[in-house]
Amino acid sequence: MKKLFMVKHFLLLKIRTLTLITVTCFTFWNVTAQDKPKTPSKHWYEQIAIRGYTQVRYNRLLETNDSLKNEQGDKSWGNGGFFIRRMRIIFYGNVSERVYIYIQPDFASSPSSGSNHFGQLRDAYFDLSLDKKKEYRFRVGQSKVPFGFENMQSSQNRLPLDRNDALNSAVSNERDLGVFFYWAPEKTRKLFSSLVNDGYKGSGDYGVFGIGAYNGQTANKNDANKEPHIVARVSYPFEFKGQVFEAGIQGYKGKYAIESKSDKVKYVKDLNYDDERAAASLILFPKPFGIQAEYNIGRGPEFNPATDSIETQKLKGGYIIASYFLKIQEQILIPFVRYHYYDGGKKHELDARSYTLKELEIGTEWQPIKNFELVAMYTISDRRFEDFKLQNNKQKGSLLRLQAQFNF
Image (spheres, rainbow, N blue to C red):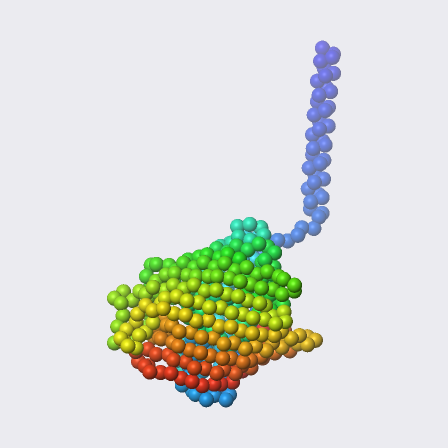
């Protein structure tokens, strides 16, 4: 009995000792944790950054023909004095490890003739990354369609004042509502970023491979035929002896529903036309000499003056830009020349207006400081643009164009 009592007493003592140690450790852990300063986690809205830019133009210096127009590029051709081409504020940031947002309104839209400076949404998309390195991601919302290097290049970075007609006629305003998948290795994504940040006129990060589906009627418009467009693009940049090259191919296919037509023009019953293109891109970034060239072929709606009807017809065209990057102390000077050609229809315009154009542009961009750029560009143009109301219309002319851009 005495031995049993001693064992029992010993076990109780052990239990009390273990309990005391456990309580002491628990208490110490709590006190230590409270004494350590806590790193406050940021709210999602603290992750959002803001930037933007504004472009002010004057297009009437040395103008020889005020009937020469460029509706898809710059509506101020032949229409008056100073003009705010773009006024954009961008909200962007990683709201979590896997979700990135990008929202861009423009406050210089011109929805009707004589009316300017309306606010309109340009981008509203969300990137959902499938991995921590963000090499695989889905982009959902209204964003640029991955077709054409210059189409995806921001107007804040582009050298010529307007995008070329040949590839830009594929997607007016370059954007549409849809879902896209992009893939690029981490190293390549950093190269995409550096080509923009270092002033070498990159297009931004649209992946080495991209594929997606979108409405097909362009930005801020509803789907008109319940048949999405499908687009795919492969583009790969690489470095060689200090130079950076990028080569790419892309294409899309769908049905486009004509939205703007004259009362007496002839058209197919459901207004739906085949809309398909393929394009090749080749870029040598200006380090210091640069070449940028693209060409596309395809089929789409186009007005036929011989039959007064909108028909599916072949199209073709492209451009080439030569530039030279000069850095003098902190200032940057980039002289450039571009030639572009297009023969085809513009589905977004009245009666899918028929075009044949040849245009030469000679200019220079001067950046004395990071927040200000000045572009002077002389344009020599030969444009035929015809619809049911405006037939036998061929205009030639030239003009000197100026643009002041403020980055903030």
